[in-house]
Length: 309
Image (tube, rainbow, N blue to C red; front, side):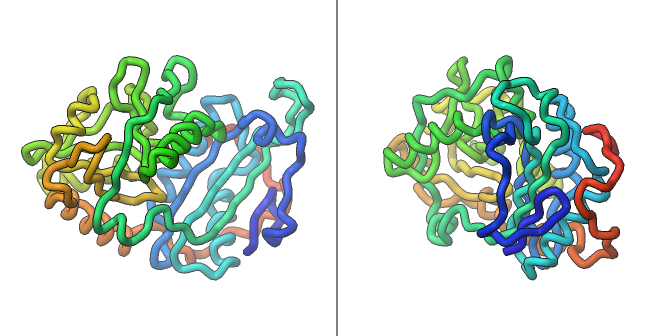
């Protein structure tokens, strides 16, 4: 495996970051998870937009232009000789000292990992997930904006631990008002009488790229969709439920807190959207083999302010 770190490639056994990197010490940084299918990167522009927006929101300067970052990402996939897989694109605050002061981190660090991923088994995609509501609440939007895809995922990890201890595949996370925010790494959707509902991003959920794709597919299929506040009651009484995420894609949920959802099987609306999603990712995206920019070596490129286009 060839891993990109600040313009150089390393084997996975030798790829290292400094113990003084604030991404490691404090979770100070941002990231994106990006899928590629059939040698095409799905929604690359949207992911890069969100990365630069997340960086700008936390006053983190990404030290290369976005066009170069895209080129480096495509080159990383090519070097790993993958047709289908998953990219983890990480930008850390960089090396500083043991204090919190981000100004002591002179240059952000960029890491690109291209690999295979399988979040759930094929059986779970066909049968559907059992999920539980966890006691760990989603961090308040007033404390940490959910639109920032930051490296600090301890809140989600604690919820995932609860799910695992309960023998469930995923955990439903509520916000401080008791409304549904999201699952540990996925957005939540319910279907009731042919209509789809999902929590608003103001409830504490990430502005998921795949979430946005579902809105587009619903418009194409003439399926009503809206964003009201949702509670566990809405999941318990739903006809169908499904989750979305870059790694998870679109996966059905058939049980929540021991309540069977619908008839206990993936429903027709969910199955239709799964089919449409798989058709979409199989034929769209940025070609991996498009004419590349010169390979980026080190930090030679002129820095760009986070959020530059």
